[in-house]
Length: 101
Image (cartoon, rainbow, N blue to C red; front, side, top):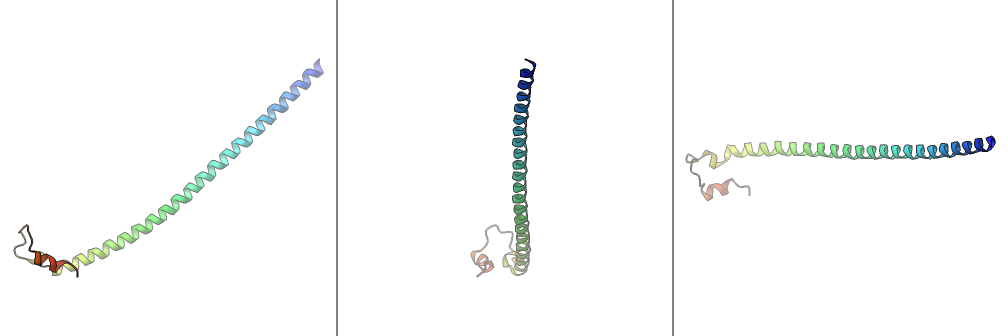
């Protein structure tokens, strides 16, 4: 009876160890997948960040250019130099002379 009980206990230990081993493998695999997913997300966000920084640079350059164009235009704009520029309705001919051709 004692040998039979010892054999049953051994079987239970072996099954429990196997079950634990499988659970540990599953847990490690899940952790690895989570880390891989986070790494992919990180890479994607880094690419997006780089792209957005490039876009900011382009828009900043465009803003500088347009500011220069506006400054140059203000020097020659008849609407800004008109003595009656307090009038709310500008003359159509003055407006068209300010527009690019």
